[in-house]
Each structure stands twice: as structure tokens, then as C-alpha cells.
Image 1 (spheres, rainbow, N blue to C red):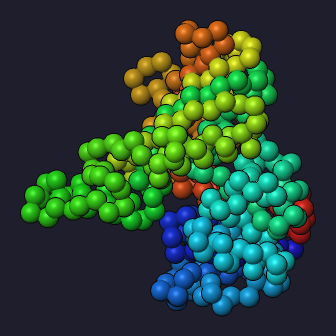
Image 2 (cartoon, helix red, strand yellow):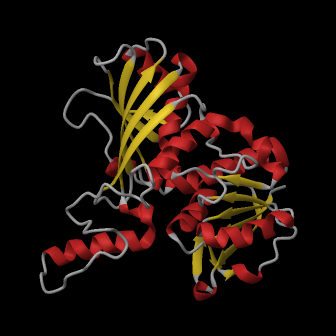
Length: 340
């Protein structure tokens, strides 16, 4: 016996990936509904070998459905997630709306699977920010061994993190560089993204950090350990898909780089690619379409007593969003609903 599953926001980048991954992982689906806003009503999307037509999110009745994967942004989620939850459908939300709610579990299954039982307070589970998700998968097994005190992370985040509009803007601006008569001014980003990097993702906060940087701090604490100190600098780069992160970690006790490499090789969701030779590391283009979070450049930091440096790369549309949501759905089925 399988589940009745809803995918809301099925025409967007993340929604389409959710459908692809549900099919790839042979999630036990008895019935599936794909929802979109009225302007996308009737748009066809693929689910395995099937073609589905989107239904209207605004009028959909969630009664009798087991779970809904939401990829519709915070404003729409604020309106429709409570309706779905009240109807008895468990919402797995990809927006930032519920991530910091103490009554809503924020889950990366490789890190804090037991938190799934907290879903019943609101019938909602939150999916973390894409940059946080890939980082904590690597942090958690190391934290379990040597307890992390502090993390300093610099991100190199692809334009797909800003949705289809971000990808289109990079494509159009790149073409315009070679055709000066067709200038493409920035709309999605603060300045030109083609052949450039932008040290701002989301809005600025009072302390000078951006909201993306703040998200990484508070989400890491909620998922892994509230005692970890985190500081982040988040940068948008002209890459279509795949986020990369340079991570410096300070531990309470010494952790040798060879032991760290062995721990990460055994950790769920991690692929270690770490050869000290040209090309012996992962780059964003290597991870596109893959489930794994890649870890490379594992080395001691000689400037502190117990430090390591890592390079972490992952497909942000997958582990950073759609894959993690499907993994949460799998976890919900295995530990709570138990129908599949």
C-alpha cells in the first residue's frame, strides 16, 4: 500500500525535481496530484513515464491526502500550508516560512532523523536552506566524533538558487556580452551576474550580514547543535546548478585529516573525492543530477589547535531542495505513517 502525494509548485525548478526524484527513488505512490497557480493551470509535467496536468492550488481539497511537498515560496505557503495541515495532510515545506518555528522540525535525514516525530504539533515539516543542507551532512559525522566549536564558511552559490528567473538572467546576460546591441540589465540579481560574483544573497540585516548568511547560522544550530558558532559569507556565482562551499571547522579536540576522511567516506549521503592532484576534487559541474554531497580538499588548518578545512559541493536543486524533501517524505513513511 502506498501514499497519496501532492506536489505543490510542480511547474517550477524544484517542483519538477521533486517529481523526478519521487519517480527515480520509486517512492510508493498510490495517487499523485500536481498543483500550480492559476497562471500555470493545465501545464503538463512529467512523473516517470506519465504526463500529468496541473490542478489549481487555490481550490484543491487536501482532505484524504497523506503528504504534500510544497515548493511555492513563503507567501503562498503561508496561505495554503495551514489548510493542508488542517485537512490531515502532512506538509513538507521547502520555503523558509517555518524553518525557525520551534514547533516545526527542520530536518536533514542524515543528521537529525529522530526530529521527524515533532511533525505532529503543526502537521508541518520544514526543509532547510540549500546551502545549509549540504554543509550539515558533512558536519554532523565529524561533530559526533570531535564536537565542533566553530564553523567559518564561504559559499559559491549557483543562480538556480534564485529560480528559473536567475538562470534565464545569467544565460541572457552571457549572450549579451557577445552581442553589445542587446544589453540585459539586472532584474533578479543586484548587479550583473554574467562573468561576475555578487557578495549578497537575500536582503541585508542590521548587523551587516545577509539573510542567507543568517539562515546558515540559525539552521546549523537547529539541525546539528545549538552550541556551534557559525559565521558565513554567501556569494552568488555565474554557475547554473551546484553550490560549492569552503568550510573551516574548529573542534574541541584534535581530529586528524585521515580519520576525518575515513569518517566522511562512511557517512550517509557523502561522496569523498580527495586526491591531491589537478582535478582530484569535485566541482559544481560534477555534482549536477547526483544525490551525493561531495567533499574534497580535506586538510588540517595549522593556524588553530584543532582545525580542518573542507570543500563541499552539491546539486542545490537536489540535496539542497527536492532530494531532501523526498528523503523527509521517505522518513515520514518509514517512521510515522508506515503504509508503504
